[in-house]
Length: 82
Image 1 (cartoon, rainbow, N blue to C red):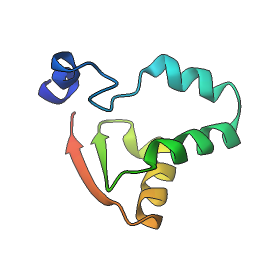
Image 2: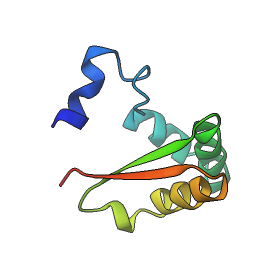
Image 3: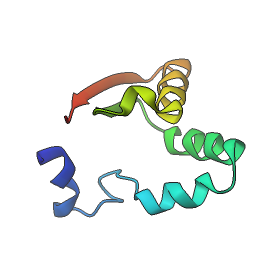
Image 4: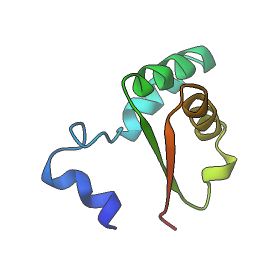
């Protein structure tokens, strides 16, 4: 709950959280748009934090983000939120 609510003190954009509605809008534009969006989200980062829940391993986009993060040399941090 602490991770989920951490955006409250500084706003979700400042805290680096992505609104589900934003992702849904990108999803409607297709796979290439999703990849480009993820790539842009990773620009200028050095660590990728993956919130690991019940459905995380079944998400192809989480897998893509992890693969891209490794490719660009980001550290990875997994946080169990289940």
